[in-house]
View (spheres, helix red, strand yellow):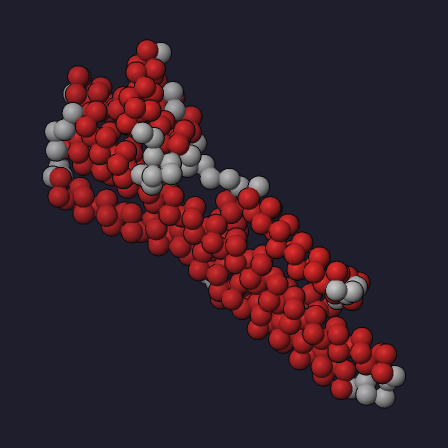
Length: 286
């Protein structure tokens, strides 16, 4: 919704100002200029990415169009799940979680938290490292180093589509210039035409530059920025889990480990201490 509102404000101001100063929208409708710009940019984008990068970008694109899934409610679910796991671990031992970790979708603990089950990145991060904890072969330092490498890999993977979209947005003005130059060439080949016809041809060529800049900075750049925000949110969620698991390995009580995790979150989504306490009590009462 925010992206749509932003588009309406941006495009409304640009085209509205043009109309108010006496311009005609019809003069901006240049399908062949748009074909040169859009087709050239898409071809360059396809050529500059490997098939896996191309697929990853197409897969990440819809995330920019939707609202964030990492809300305060999601973080409360995560913190409550971690508290449940750590409490079970403290009461019944680490091996009591083996079945839950091996098949989380059949686990009575995980079933209570549908937002976590729906995110395979979160689910895999929790279960993979709890599986290593159950194996008992890694110390805290080794586990932390492994998590850091995992987080770096995850973030780099998330950055691939962002860089591809940013490069495409930055290239759009150049493709607009290409379309404008092609239009000027066409105009120069038509110098025997009346001034009115030449004016239309020059106007069409200038529209190419306009469309390239508009599409690059008013349409594609905001999408790339939102994709970057989603990547940062995803990494922050994994950092939250990392801190909690390491605190548990250092023998901190469940409530303290969860509090460590809470403090990692961004302030605008972080539940307060009281909110978390209330949510944990309510979950315990169910």
